[in-house]
Length: 392
Image (cartoon, rainbow, N blue to C red):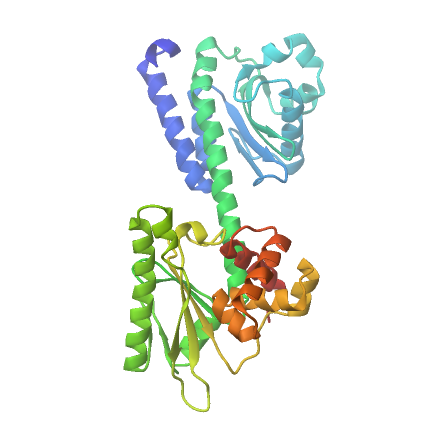
């Protein structure tokens, strides 16, 4: 790197420090201002801006150097930057004079309306991402009267810009994952039956409000940060044994050799009852083992078991009419989809509906086709997302 930059070790250390700040900012977005300042210093800029716009990712406008400009100035800088760098290759930093001669730049609206009032002139810029609905740009500038950026400055920018682009994409993906997680957990939170997600150590990852309410009642279910259990000793043993067996199913699947042996280990839910004080009917707890590949989008991939807490004396919370309207299900298809989404396996759902398992399998094929999914877990995820609108 030393030979490529042709500069002192001090410059190299400054570049490395800027790159470190960039990746720290990707994980902690509040640090972007310091990262942009570090990049500007590494390439010899007095001011800098990192701008992200569009509907395809999180918006961002970070400026360093000088006072914080009023919003209209910032908007003009962002729009001018997009126009100015439109012809620049993505990921390649270029000096201003490579895009426009100094004389032409002095006559441009970008200079007369924005750069000159801000007291600057020479600049260096790089598009980091250019998609139809999302653009990210970086630019650094020098004060009016300062010399242009040197070849060494451009070389330093060329070392930094790929890391800057990578960090921006990392943050975009993390933000997208966060949004998906928030959406998925919101769906579960709004369901009117209890749902608890457990990890491989049988510890709760998430419990929706209905599950928490059932536990707070102190009548049957016990839910702590470390385990799920029952007030009755016999119910507690049965529930813990079933959860342990569900975790073990995943372990055996992961150790199984060959597709046939994997397919031979079912992922069917088990069912346990948790007694409550009369006249309340016992809770029906369905214990569903899940593989990481089957976890619905947005849910923690550490989830290995899902508990569905059913209250037999409460009506179902998903409106089959609205579900049928959304997906053009028949009445039977909607009923089957709801039962599967509530934790039943296909055989149990067939018994509940009073139909043969082969008939239920035919209905399931239609449900998968109409929800544009290929696996039962995907279909359940879709139905639960619709359930956010129809659950009480």
